[in-house]
Image (cartoon, rainbow, N blue to C red; front, side, top):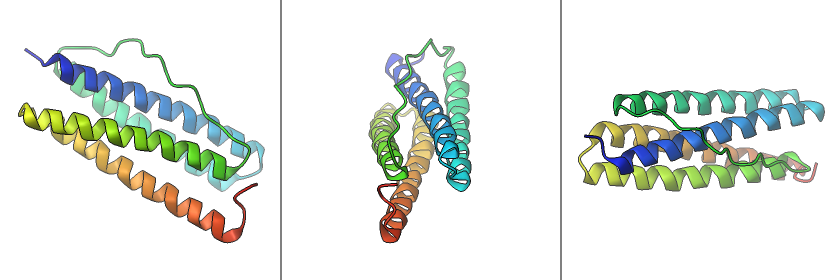
Length: 148
């Protein structure tokens, strides 16, 4: 029998990943309107990565004999500048890191190692993503483009 708390973590994770993909796609379109094609492509790549995470999580949920429920996605957060968008994304990714750390630790304690490994894998991707966001923000600040 599957642990209902693990199913809950998987469901929360799927909701996060779909919400993140939605946010990155909306931001991709927004920065394209601003004429920032390279940044638009970066956000589309981020959305694709989040959908890949959702796919892994859904596969794991199905393994447990459960299916994802209809999720209430988080609202898309935008801003008036690329720096605003990056700050919104950093906050979103930090929320994901907290979720994945908690889920990984719980699964390790329950000796649900396949689930723990999945959460750890996605956790490491999210940590790397925060580092990428930090580097982009530092680059923006260095060029003096934080406000526009």
